[in-house]
Image 1 (tube, helix red, strand yellow):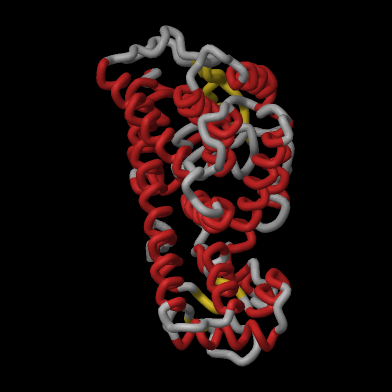
Image 2 (cartoon, rainbow, N blue to C red):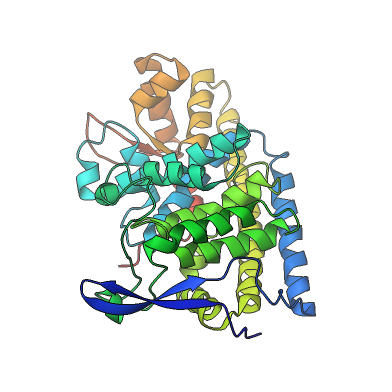
Length: 387
């Protein structure tokens, strides 16, 4: 449905040019969401899929091993939407200190910042710290701590005008609220986050759009806004582990995603956005369950191959198990993590390479990196760079 008043345009002057900036109305929408039969059904399907995903964590032998790689996949996808050219392999290699010079050759350092920001936010929530503006600033500060955004006020709401699209505010696709009204906009936004009358799925959907519309930072708004979806799910208890990330869905449907954000601002069409969002939650949750099952199946199959070879050294099984959590790593990392001798680790790696379970990817004698190739291929779905 169309809403006559979704916010107000105010004239602000930027570099001597008068531009119309948009100040959104506080949430929830007024008039309220029109819950059609289709919209109710989409929300129910999303809730069922989300519940299925959450219950799956109780069946995973070691959820933390799956989470290590899955969180990094999300970091890569969310950063790719913003234009970074880093793959999951780049990130995993960067996290191995034996890969000098990689940050200069790729955007892996920015993706690594995203992982750190995400982990910080989730840790704070587990400590019963509320989801609030202060936590959002903390996350942003970590996100922009190193890399291209480090000079754009990390951890601070902007004190100047920004815009989306175009070369200047005058020809921009969208101009967010002026900085002098940010305090009011963000105060209302924080109040909405604590509105207990709104269901978790609806809250995550509405909050994401509102955050992107306010665009409170000079840089990193998209990444923080997408991360906010998962933080809300975990904070409100819909997920016990951070397994739902919509960046792949948004990347696949990028033009529709941006069009729907703009339709909310221009027409107040929250209903079309909610249908899109709920479909994304269902598709993404089902995809995460499928990925987890595929990874578990591959690991068990390879483990059985090792056991079928007769008496296999326990260290080989240990090293294989380690790659389940970190599918690309160096011998030194394994030595440190498993407290095994370098000779034992190298012998195990050679055996796993001979079994074609692992592959050494550098071709060097020093600074070697081993890859659990089939495992990473499953995780890599959707993260391939568009050339």
